[in-house]
Length: 167
Image (tube, rainbow, N blue to C red):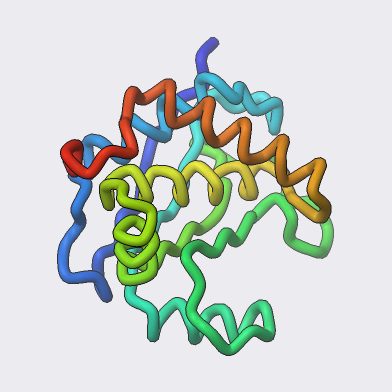
C-alpha cells in the first residue's frame, strides 16, 4: 500500500501568508512519502506539522533546542527520535514530527540564489522531512546523499527553481 499523508497541520501564525497553498503542501508531502516509502511502522498514513514562521520565532526555537541563538532556515523535531520508552503503536496516522521554516530566511536564500520562494520552501520542507525520517548529514558523504535525495524529491513534484514559477 502506498503511504499517504493524512494530515498536514499548517500553522501560519507568525508568517504573513503562505506563498504555497495548503493543497500543494499536502500533494508534495504525499508524493515524497510515496517515493521514500518509510518503513516506520505498519501504518500507511502519516501526519506532519508544518509551521511557516519568521526569523525571530525560529531563532527562539533554535536557541532553546539547539543552543544556537540565531535564525535558521528550517528546524525538524522528529517524534520518532524522542528519548524514553517507545510508545505503544499509535492510532493512524503516525505522527512524524514538527517542521518549522522561516519564510524570511527562505526568501533571502531564494533571492540570493535567483530562484523562486516556492522552490526554496519546498527544498527546505523536503530537507526537514528527511530529518523526520531519520536522515542526517554529520559529514560530507552523508550531506551529499541527503542533497541528492532532496533533488530527487523536488524533481518528483516538477518544481523548477526558476523565479518565474513562484506558485
